[in-house]
Amino acid sequence: MIQTRSAPDAATLIGSGKVEELAALIQGLTADLVVFDHELSPTQQRNLERRLKCKVIDRTQLILDIFARRARTREGQLQVELAQLNYLLPRLAGRGVEMSRLGGGIGTRGPGETQLETDRRRIFGRIQKLEQGLDSVRSSRQIQRRQRQSVPLATITLVGYTNAGKSSLFNRITGAGVLADSKMFATLDPTVRAILLPTRRKALLSDTVGFVRNLPTTLVKAFRATLEEVREAEILLHVVDASASDAPTQVRHVLQVLSEIGAASTPQILVLNKTDLLPESDADYDAIGARLLGDAGSVVAPHTAGVSALRGTGIESLLNLIDDSLPLDPVCHVTFRFPLTAVGKVHLVHELARVTAVVYTEAYCDVEADAPQSLRRRLARYILGNPAQ
Image (cartoon, rainbow, N blue to C red; front, top):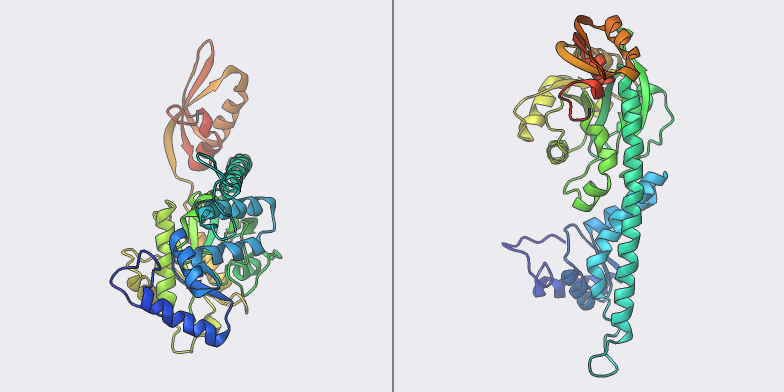
């Protein structure tokens, strides 16, 4: 059912008349579940279940349930459970049907109220443990990221709407056996593989979770450790299902999520996937890309490539485009400050940069040099003025 309202109804979202119409439809179809493509407040969900006499869920709960089915690694399971508990917590108060709050006397609280407080306390405790576990995961990811950054390899990340074919493209480029299925959110955990570009340069390619319109804020917070991979990338491969009728809408939603997580300024390559499903007359991929981004409100149109991850066409052109788009390790003047226990790093600077001055003090060795970006990233903790120092 579709309804247009000037404003949502505070009690039921859709209003009493539409609720009666929906109740009649449920009775006629003997339906046992109603899914709202809109976020429901705990009060609205409670009122609707009471009036409709069946289970009611909203888009957030549906997405969380799908995520829970897809989570395979420990990190993914922690992230999903945290999002589910944060979603459940404000809805505990609505369990008045099965938990009576009638007290046994003046100033006393009934068993229902006690059970409610017990559940809340247990959920709060579990949330704290999950957040601690995710902090540990985040620390491990930062260590892994620093280890990757210590080697001068660029990181390329696949992003796009769910079911756009990112994992299929990832498998086609890297030869990895990542699950590629025609399901929403089939990939929850990022996978990183090394690839060899046409100029014989190596790079790291990362596959990430698919985006969706109106991504619940609880998921954005829970999947922060995963989405950090997107923010750290040198180039984003924005994969679009070119055969989808609502491709412009999907592009717009992906750009919105990238803006929300702070990755809007990262250089992008628009990858039109499933081009084997397009008619032969639609072979001008630059025009298709400009139309998609124009409809999405994008100001700057990135490079566009047309591929078919299923058939393997266009992959070589895409790799050439990635190769041309990667920065060439720009050089700038910096000052390194090494403790005397790490003077072995001085040799590395002499080897990979042009040293202009070296000054030894009682505790440090200061080295001024014209250093490439890969070396600056590798020795970032020793650069004067770096907050991470």
